[in-house]
Structures are given as C-alpha cells and as structure tokens.
Length: 129
View: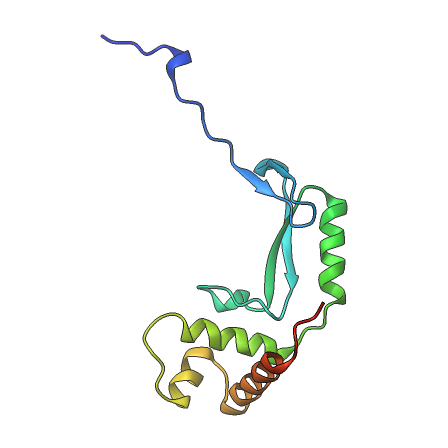
C-alpha cells in the first residue's frame, strides 16, 4: 500500500572509535585494539580482566606506542589489590567486616592491609608535575 522511498530511510549510525594515543576519531572497523597489563585497572564486572586494560588505536604504530608505554610502567600488585577493593566498596551491598571484604575481593587479609597501606601512602604524596 504505502511505499517508503529509499531516500527517506534514516541513515545508519556508523560506530566510531577514539585513538587512545592521538585522540583521532575513526570508524570502528579500522580499530586496532587489544589488552595491555595495567595494575591500576580492575574490570567493573569480570575479575578475570583485572590487571588488564583494553586500548584502542587508529593504527598498528599507535597501538605499539601505547603498548610500549604500558610495558615501561611498573606493575604494582598493591595497586591492583587497591583497585579491587575500590570496586567492591563502590558497588553492591556495604562491606562491614574484613572477612566480607576478603570474600568479595578474593584477597587475603595481609594483601588487603598492604593495599590499604599502599593507597594511604599514595594519598600522602604531593601530586606529580
């Protein structure tokens, strides 16, 4: 009965990505992406990805530059543990005891104490730069 003209169809939205190095915007189909080790990264929902950061680049050269930057950055266990603790404390039901925190983070009490000490020491340091 009623026919819609092809020109009247809404254009499909093209997914775009942003290069983590140069901030260029480009089609998602051209993205070079992967995971790099990063002790400051705790995945929001899947702890299998804790300690890994997903990065996206506009070219192989930019991906290699990003990967090299993360390769030179030290991987600090206490930083990863602090990120896990932060994730637990900012989501879900409140944690009332050390045992609950240990259960929800998968860490042992000595690791939790080291992470808290690391975090507190970082807070005391003046900002870099």
